[in-house]
Length: 267
Image (cartoon, rainbow, N blue to C red; front, side, top):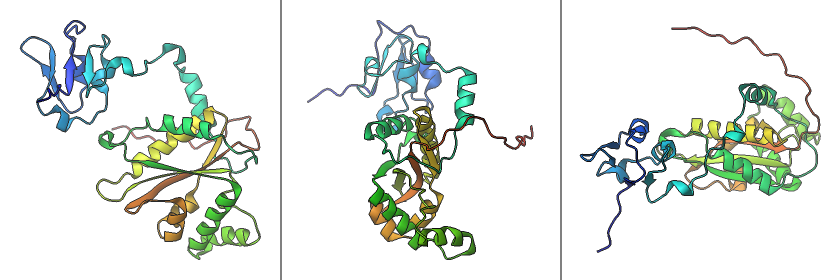
């Protein structure tokens, strides 16, 4: 019979018994054993959410999680630490871009932004999202057309629909790409997970010189349009939770715009 290794293993030659892995485990799966070393609970494999806090916090690389050794994980590099001022400017200078160059975005760059976005927080570390990336003028116009077909004929949408009928795309704004996230409809509501992931994506895109804008009209249309969902390749039992237009901005922004003062109440 094959020997099954514990879900959480600690190397006694490396561990200095500082208890950091115990303190950081959000599910309380680790405790000091009789020998003074951290040890995982017997049912750790069943209850662990694989957040990685235990293996990532250990300064001695003494812990292995689910067969994953610390050496297999990328180290945090201090040379890339962002100053508060740089982070503040990145966040404040992000714009909703609605004018794009015709230049298509390289797949490798979009994948790099998605790779960053998968580190966004998700409830219980479920990581429930799947991604769809649309590209090419013909496909983008097709998606914009399906969105126009599905929009409610209400006064608010009239201007968008009239512009579309004149040949103006104010739905997907002529963007070369659309990035969509979707997840299962059963179980927990993953709307917040999607918003977090797409926010990570748009900030990563901004750092790479790309522009993005939330595709709110398409998101609304996707709720009730089987044709739009089919065109996006959304799996049965899944629903669209968010979408971003993406591309190279046609114009640059030189200043930070004004915003309302924060309304804060301390308790």
